Amino acid sequence: MAKRKSESLAGTERRMEEVCELENCKQALQRVKANKGSPGVDGMTVDELSEYRKQHGLKIGEQLRSGTYQPQPVRRVEIPKPEGSGMRKLGIPCVLDRFVQQAVLQVLQKRWDPTFSEPSHGFRPGRSAKQAVHKAQQYIAEGYRWVVDFDLEKFFDRVNHDRRLAAVAERVADKRMLKLIRAFLKAGVMEDRLVRAVDEGTPQGGPLSPLLSNLVLDDLDRELERRGHRFVRYADDCNVYVGSERAGQRVMESVTRFITHQLKLKVNQTKSAVARPGRRKFLGFSFTGEREPRRRIAPKASARFKERIREQTRRTRGISLTQMVTQIATYLRGWLGYFGDCQTPSVLQTLATPSTPVGGVEAMETGTDALSRTSQTECEPGPGGANRRQSSRPVAHRQLARSGHRSAECLLCPARTPAYGRAVSLIRRTAGCGPAGPVVWQVVSRRRASVMLYER
Image (tube, rainbow, N blue to C red):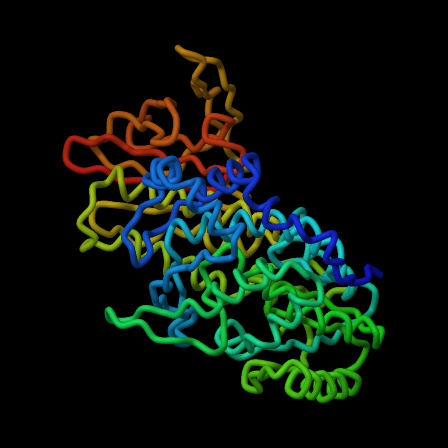
């Protein structure tokens, strides 16, 4: 088990100098630009950051080294939570503050992360939600077929600042670093053009927020490890796996007391439960009740997928067909890249049914049954090194095209295929659309255009 160690003052005298090192700042700038994001309260965009840093970089570095850097308030943004369970509050820091936070994160994370608990997977280098789901599946296969599902109510809004800073002080002795982190926590929030002070919580949206949250919840991990529990945690989603319902109820009561009295957080009793893993969802997945459990897409995740597709294909969006298809394709890439890890093809087959045409667009995602009946595709280099898709004679066709369609072209790569009368062949995706990308065909018609989306 990794042990936490407070850094000696001699070892932390140059922590802020490490933050200001040229190579560290270059990496932070690249990461902030790659993450993109909206402007903060000052209106500066990510594209303007490089030029601003060239003009004011020396001044910013001097402020950090002298401990006088002052962050600006974050811009409050609210987005709807999944399943319509209210609004989630986000805090958008200024681009410059995001750059400084990222530089600090890169220095602290490489020292703190090795000391965190093994079952913690959220926002850590080399770890992912998929790994957390696989670990949960392993516990179930080992016979721990009851899950204690804890839901921390408004965790990011209720974390006590003093407790968080005390946890930081146990690991960092550089007073400049402590003062800077305190300044980020106390920077305030701008809502309706008014800035208000905050005494608890941390805004979701800054690069440093996940690391500080893991630091607070590390105490929960240590307690669960001390008790010998088998658990998996991803950010504020924590599942403990036990052998019986009675054991689960005991764990629920005792761990709830620890979270309430020691961590000063609140467990949402309505959303927390002791149940069979198949009746709960964890990071969008659920599990079958077989002897060897299989991963399956949770029903709520499937429902959110369908609702997202309906939203993106509604008539009143006011965007072009090409823009709509590009947005849908981007969403499908991410969705399939994550949920393609499921082990129940029947769920994907359920999602394969065509949606109702909306605004001249038909969205279709085929399951594995359709893929098994399609022809293989060969990918040959085209002009300029681009991939050009050529299909062998199709094994089966699906009646997707309407009368008057002449050809179909992929909107993600230079592939093109002729329409066979009233049918367009379905062919497998190739490297031309990326390693996890769906093929998106736009059928060219004299009267209207339809779009077909299907899974790899």
